[in-house]
Length: 429
Image (cartoon, rainbow, N blue to C red; front, side):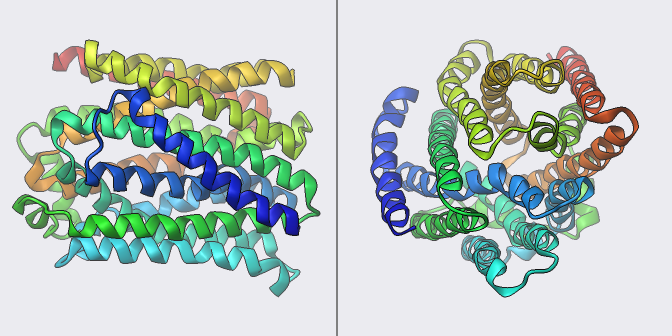
């Protein structure tokens, strides 16, 4: 444990320096101004915790004896947290939105330190406690997300948003892939549950370092609309503002089609780790390799999708990404060969990069600056309604037709979302 504990921080620090130095060149982001530099450093450190949560938390819950329903709750719980806080976020963040975003981000980190200590505190209901702590972290986390999305649009000029966003996502993918790869080795080297405790501890520590760079953004000047948009109305009026204002029909079409696609993502979320671990019997290291391949594919894809969006527009780029992403659960269900799954994972990572970049860009383009927090809050709520229903529907489908059949259904739902998106894009252009 001592050797691993000394090695991991050195690997992470040295690796992110290399990643950070090359990311701007890869994406063609040009000279890095102080605001962009802090945005890059913040997301690079935060990427460690994101990877631990996204990859190892569901597997950790299963290893602790978590049931399929609990794994579904682990996916649905954060969505419920987002539904509860996304709409009132603009009200909760006033009158000092920047500082309250910082406090919300700090509060969202603390439950992961509790997860580190959990195996030493109790031997009962550990899986339930891990799931509850993760869900708890998302309450302040989603408040911070809504505020940060609006803040990002204010901090970065429109002409540079796509490049800065691409670089951030590139850094997030690179650091995440490195974390998953090293995390798989740690889990094989250390006894259970010490390996998982080590990963959550490193993730917590790196997320605290990320706050240092986020705090520097607090001194960055914001235009007046960044503050006025934080003074949002009550939740019901926020929904009305996002669906009844000028241009809202186009926004509603974008939201409904993409949220239908998100429903398909939510359905597959609890099924994939169960399929890997229980149906295929993959070891922790193999799961880590699978996710690492997907992460590396997304890293390669960000410059590709960014270039396509520049040439053909975000609408076309996002449509292609959504279509490719739809085939991930379908192809997964059609193979039991672990090596073939690596290729399928690479396709998923490649498509996921375009989906993420296109959705964020599309949202910022649709939301007017003076009411950006309200639109982001409304869209976040709609998205997580789909992600809340999805895992439950996926779990019920797996009981009815098995995990393989449920994955096929999830892919079909994604394709319905793609069709709705194409219809919206055709009518909007």
